[in-house]
Amino acid sequence: MADKEKQTTASYKALRQLRHNDEKVKPGQTVELTEAEAERLLDLGAIEALEKPKSGGKNSGSGGKTKEGTDDPKDGENDPPKE
Image (cartoon, rainbow, N blue to C red; front, side, top):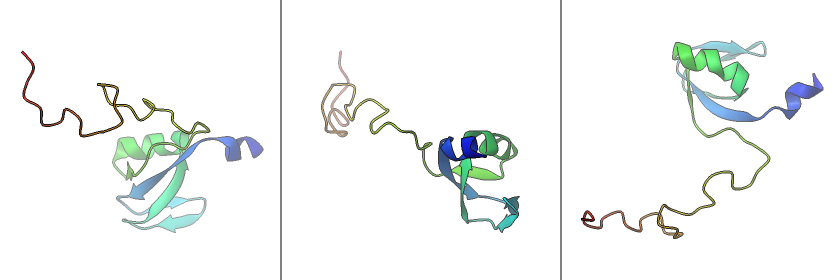
């Protein structure tokens, strides 16, 4: 059981009524699930992801940089196409 606590989890929104850990989860409610727990429910369309799985890393993505290497996410967003 201790291993289950160490697994990464993410928040999901229930789209249908379901039962998790002997508790009823109604549509619209949020539930914390591991990737393994969520996999089948996602395939069935019973839940949708609200956030990416929580991992130990602080910035596991691109480090906050856009493709141009700047911190501004809007940088280049409305620029004319490059030729």
